[in-house]
Image (cartoon, rainbow, N blue to C red; front, side):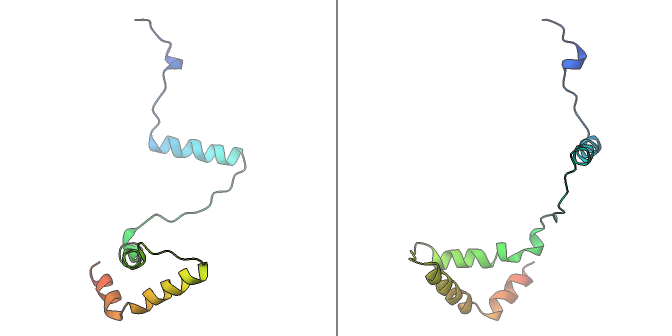
Length: 92
């Protein structure tokens, strides 16, 4: 097996080094960083409560216009009770 020069072997960067290199790159290229909040499931209960309920009730249906989709979605939302929402938040 042939020996390879060390400069051709990729080095693994630590997390701090990756962050530092990224910051240098962004500053060098004058790129703005847009802050993005971390995804926290406990802050988005609609992902686990509301959307699945709506999906169940609207599944398999066809709509001709956006207005019909909006009207049916509003109907589904109106069928949800305060207790449904309260139960969803108490489960967290």
